[in-house]
Length: 271
Image (cartoon, rainbow, N blue to C red):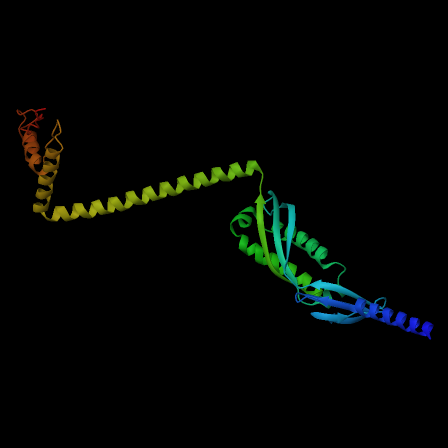
């Protein structure tokens, strides 16, 4: 009787140990892909799942977004410029069964696909596009990578080019190009300013010629400004309408050398 009880206790302990070993806890952000004797059972979890030791095998798949850093890649752009480009890829698993059944290691496979796609997409763009239109390249990269990882149950959320390294010689050439572009813009702006100023001066001259009183007021205002500055030399401008009769008279009278041209006197202010 005692031997029979020992056997019962032994089997009870074994069954209890198997039951405890069969219990698995799958977290909320995980799914378990179970195989029973090599055959797929399907995704399990979250929560407590039962896996029979020696018969079932459980593969845990993380459903959270994974950050994958692509190491720097040597790329030759379309305009034959060598550059080193690195990027970051954010992806997550949407179908745990496909991520286990369709590919051996989805993280490594996604990394390799991202590297080759980065070289391919950047190689089709020129350097200016790579530097100035990076958002368009990011969209192309994300679409290309997502197209290849979709059969694996993986969704690519974001692809961003982090850094672009170009040779130092090319950096100096780009700096000279930028400086020349700024000088060109400055000259164009100056020329446009001269054109606008000449147009305004022409309109002002037409307006003053139509109103002699306005011209006289402008003349008196100029004299007032000269007097306020305490200049040592003051030049009084004489309109050509006043000088022209004297010039014509000098041509008619040969005995008058130079004619009766008004004398312009230099007036010095007391210091």
